[in-house]
Length: 275
Image 1: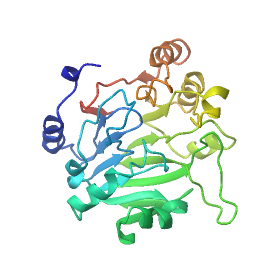
Image 2: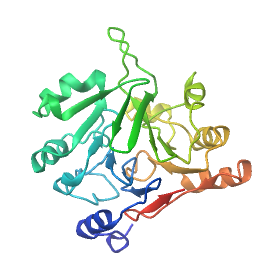
Image 3: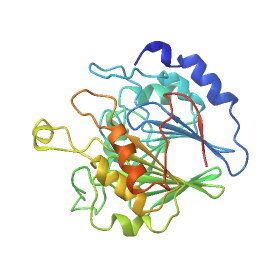
Image 4: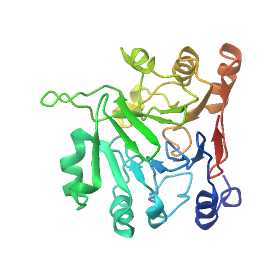
């Protein structure tokens, strides 16, 4: 990936601010890994924004933490560095009083203290919990990264997937997850226009190295096909050499097995409609 292929932070920020979806429309930008920007007619949301330039990342940060001062909500699906970016979040919060931060309820007390951020900046989510941000409804479901890891004391989950609904459009950001018993039944409540699914898979060597796994590309493809989504995007395959996935194999598999589902692979930092 050449830097010439990527927008500069100022170019991307200008595009985001200039983009005004009509009522009932959604616009999506991919920042690499499982990081996205979702903009509706009224709301601007960031999902797992990974902005810290740590060693080993293959796709550089496309925005600076201070650029997110315009956001209505920052979502962190779970407490790993490429999903809840601990160095970046206090900088975002310090740049503006506007953004709130949605995290798994189980993690909220410790995160607020450890990040030295006011408790009132956070909102907690858990299985079946919904919040509304302007014209977007967000509902959480559990994710299994490689296990559900439900907390015995509270019954809450440390890993979440998020469903975004606005103006009749519906997007599922799976978070980091494997398939688990009950996932299909939970998702059956919705008819998805777009599913954002990790495809980097898992194996014994990575798990031993504490690289916790996700769906294989075949599992992700079957989930998208079985849920009869309009479109699907393979994610979480591009950021680290030790934790890759194969989006080309995913796309070939989808075209053969589920040709009615559109595979979406937008360039980094270039807005695309959710249709």
